[in-house]
Length: 120
Image (cartoon, rainbow, N blue to C red; front, top):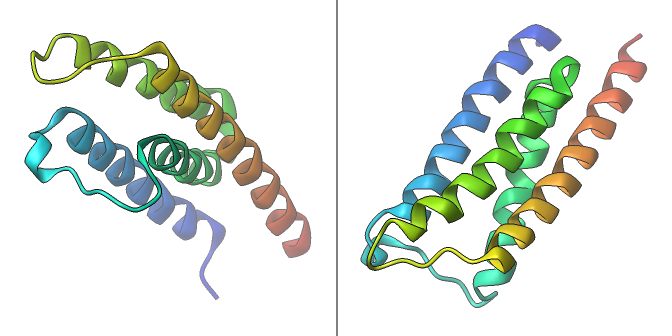
């Protein structure tokens, strides 16, 4: 059986890779941005929902740290888009990312608590 510490380390790596991928897609060349049939707002929400879950699971004892990273990334990525002539940062886009991130953080934190309580 994999220890919780080993799983936590793996989750931390995956969480940081996921947020780096979002940063690349958000700030990188538009030609490399993947598109889906969901639409941009659903994509933003889902991406930050997943990142929120990953960070909450990766840092369950440091949920406020995870929240600062996820919410801070949503805000900073929108701000950095203002600095790019080919991009545009919008408050609505940031809000969608923040809501997805907060819901993901909550879900990930509760899931981690449930898994830990079952291991005891």
